[in-house]
Structures are given as structure tokens and as C-alpha cells.
Length: 352
Image (cartoon, rainbow, N blue to C red; front, side):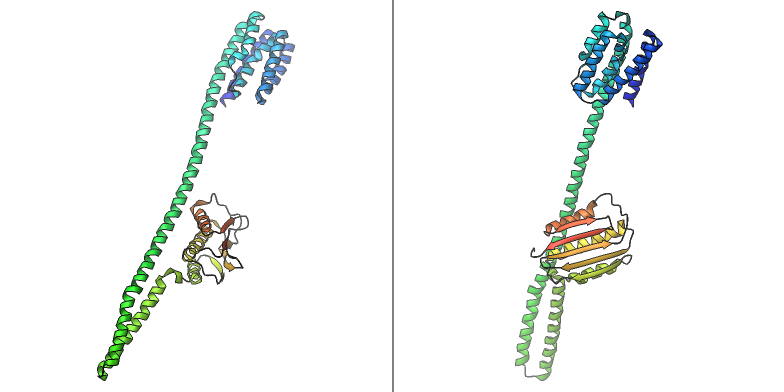
């Protein structure tokens, strides 16, 4: 805006002095010529062409003195080229002083005004370019910081989950190896005492105690099996999750006999939850298809709704975490929003 203002001001002075030193007809010719020269200098960004216009103006000024009034317009456009000094335009001032001394004062006044605008605009451009560069660098730094934070969040969640699973396994082993073995020994010892005991009443009481201990041992085994994650029934867990989304109409299909590892099971559960949350948050449809299907070398996971014109500003933490977990499982992940929200995951078999 400031640059346009400076051009307008210089233009006004140019035509004022042209009209002062020329008749009406000549002024009109110079007016048209001035517009052409100014537009060429304004539109052309190549230094060689710019210098050519300057040389052309210099040659014309030897024949038509009023051409010198347009030199400030050329000066103003020099700010586009960092390596052009105002000394480049010294020949015009020399011509003006030695050949056209009668208009030296007017041209000097205009050139001084142009020089002021030149340095003012150049400084503004430098500040503006520095600001753009600073903004660009900070924008990249912010994006990188956001990416690192998302990675740390994902890593932290994985470590917490791993620690919880490890502790559950330790508790299950302690119960099985500690309490379970002691109860088993007690059952064996009671069985031996029951055989040796001759008194029928005491023998019956020992049998009752033995039976209670066996039932207790069975209950402990069931509890241990429910704690150990490898026994997690993925299909049933997913059914529970699906039933929990009462605001969504979900068609769930599980057609896989593949035995997923511990981490894979929990990753799949997390992915399904996050995908359904995205549908709930961004989609304009409550109808969702969720399927897990096994083929020869892969297990495919598809989450898709029937929404239209879905808008997601950026991937966010949810989709980034899904992609990160799929990558750790050695799979591929893609999502689209053109024809409803759709997530497709391919997990290769054999990776534990």
C-alpha cells in the first residue's frame, strides 16, 4: 500500500513538471510515454530488462529533455533488485546538470523524493521479508514440535499400557506359582490323609475340605486365565465396545481365526475406539460398518460410515496415534473422507 502511494505521489510531480515545461500536445505524448515506461519498470522482474529500460530512458533524454522527469519512476522500481545502487543512476543527473540546467532544480527535487521513497520501501521490504522468513521458520518449528509431542504422547501411552500388562502378568504368575502350588500340595496331602484315615466321620470331613480346596483351586485358575492378556477374547471385547456406542448404528463383522499377540490385541482395541470416536466427532452420519477379515497373508480392518461432505482440519492426535500403532504392527494405514469417513488397515500375519 505504501509503495503504491509513493508511485502515485511521484507520478503527480512528474506530470506537473511535464505540463510546466511543455505545451498541451507534447504533455499528452509524454504522459502516454511515461505510463508505458512506469508500467514496464513495475511489471518486469528481470534485472537485465530493467537495466535496458534505464539505458533506453537515458538515450531518449539526450533528445527529449522532459523524459528526465520519469527517472524517479525508474528509481522507485530499483528496490526489487538488492544489488542495484543509486549510483547507477548518476549519469541521468550528470546529463541533467550539464545539458538541461534550466530544469535541474525540478528534477533534483523529484529524484530526492524518489530516493526517500526508495530507501523507505526497501527497508520495509527487508523487514517484511525477515518477518516472512521468521514466520516460516517458526511455523516449521511448531509443526516439528507438535509432531514430537504426538510421538511422546503415543510412546508414553504405549509404555503405560506395557507396564500395566506386565504387572498383570506378574500378579497372575505369583498367584499361580505361589498360592496355586500351595493349595495343590494341600489337596494332595489331604488326599493322602483321607486314604489313611479309618474313622468314617473324619474321613468324610477331610473329603469335604479336599473338595472345597479343589473348587477354590478351580476358581483361582479361572481368575488367573482372565488376568493373563494372551487369553483376551478380542472379538468379545470389540462387541462390548460396539455395544457401548449407543448413539451409533454399527454393523460389526469379525471373520478371523488368527491369533493376535498381546500388543496387537490392545492396539486393535485402541484403534477401533479411536476410529469410532472420530466418526462420532466429525461425521454427519450415525451408520457405521466395522469389519475384521482374514485372508491368506493379511488381516484387514475396515471402519466406514455413510457420511457426506466431511471436513477434518488436520489429522490430530487420534489419527496420528492410529497410524503410529499400525506402523509398529508392521501394517499399512490409510483414511479418506471423500465419500464418508473411512479407515482401512492391512496387518500382515506372522508379526508378533
